Image 1 (cartoon, one colour):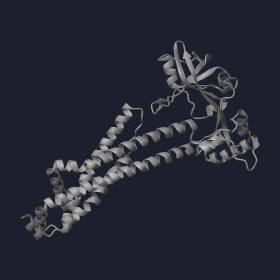
Image 2 (tube, helix red, strand yellow):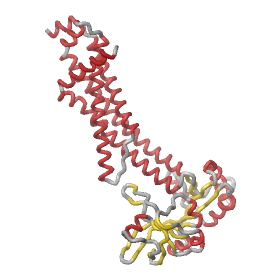
Image 3 (tube, helix red, strand yellow):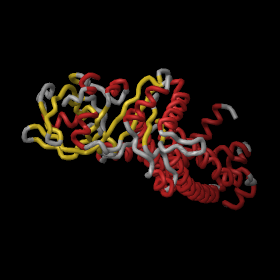
Image 4 (cartoon, helix red, strand yellow):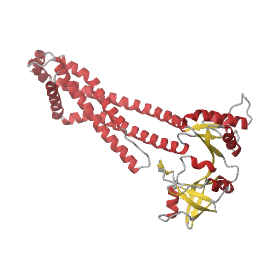
Amino acid sequence: MNVQLAGEMMRVALGAIWSNKLRSLLTILGNVVAVASIMTLVSLIAGISDEVADIIVTEVGADSFLIDRVGLVASEEELERRRGNPRISLDDQEAVRRFSPRVAAVMAQGRETGEVRYRDEVLERVTIQGVTSEYDRFQAFTAERGRLMTPTEVARRRNVTLLGWSTADRLFGGADPLGRTVTIQGVHFRVVGVSRPKGTLFGQSQDEFAVIPLGAFRRLFGNRRPLTLTARPADPADLERAMDEATVALRIARRLGPREENNFGLLTADTVLDIFNRATSGLVVVLVGVVGLALVVAGIVIMNIMLMAVAERTREIGLRKALGAKRRDILWQVLSESIFLSLAGGALGTALGAAAAAALERFTPVPAVVHPWSVLLALSVTAAVGLFFGLYPAARAAALDPIDALGRSG
C-alpha cells in the first residue's frame, strides 16, 4: 500500500469516527478507565520504589554492609529463634576491624527516640543516633552547615551533636544553631553541625535526628541498648569478600563451631532492595492481570462496535469495492478505525493517569513518578488491543461481496 493510499484510508477512517463522536467516545471509555488506572498505580509503585531505594542506599550505603543481631528472616519461627542471638557489641566491632583486612572502616551505631529541647522549643520524638569515631567515613553522615563531629570528640565522648536539618529548623527557626547548646534527654550538647536535608518518606521526615558520640549515647540510654555495625570495604569491588572476612571474624570472636549457624545477620542495600522489589513486582503482576482483563473487555466492546459499524456501512463498503477498492484496502480502513479508537482511549487514559499521579504526589504524602517507559507501554498495549480485536470486523468487511452488499443495502 503506497503512502497516498494509506493516507486516504486514514482520512476515511477518521471521518467515520468523527461522524459518530458519541459512539466513538463510549467505545473508548473502557480503555480510558483501564489505562488511567494502571498508569496511576504504576506511577505510585514507581514513586514508592524510587524513594525507598534512595533511603536504603543513603542509610546503608551502596558500598557498605550492615551487621545486626537478627538479619533477614523469612518466617515468624525464624524471627523467634534469632531473637535469642547475643547482642552486637563493641567487641564484635573490634573483631571485624582486626581480622577483616578488606574492611576499611567499621562503625557501631545505636538508635533511640528521645527529647531534644532548645529554650522553650521541645521536640519529643527525635531519633537519637550514637556513633563511633569512624562514622564520618560513611555517606549517610553529611554537614550542610558547620562540620561533622571529629573522631577525637567521638572517642572522648564529648557532648557534641550533629542535628538533622528538620530538627535544627524546628528548634531554631531562622537562627544560626552552630555553637548553641541544646538539651538531649535533659543533658546539654553543643551543636557543631547541621546535616543536609534527606527529604520525606510517606510524609515522614527523614531529617528528625541528632547524632552524638556512642559513649554519650550510652550515658543517656544505658549500655544494653541494641547496636548495629556498618562496615565498608576499601574497594567496593571487594564487598562480598569483605563480608566473608567479617563473617569469619565474628564466628571466631563468638567461638562458633563449624556446624553452628551464624548468630548474627549481614545485610547489604542490594539485599534489602531485592526483597522490596520482589514484593512490589508481585503487586504489579496482580494489578497488570486485573487491568489486562479490563482491556480485554474494552477490546470486546470495540470489536462489537466495529461489527455494528460494518453492518451499518454495508452499502458504503460495497460501493467502494465496486469502484475498485481491494480487500486489503477495506481491511486497512476498518483496522485503522479500530486501532485509532483504541489508541485514543489509551492516550486519554495515560493523560488522566499521569494527572492523577501528579495530583496524588502534590496533595498527599505518597510519592508518584511517571516514567517514559510506562507511557510507551500503555500506548503500545492499547494499539495491540485495537489491532487484535479489530481483525475480525475488518476481515468481515473485507470479505463482503460488492454485488451482495449493494443488493442488501438497497
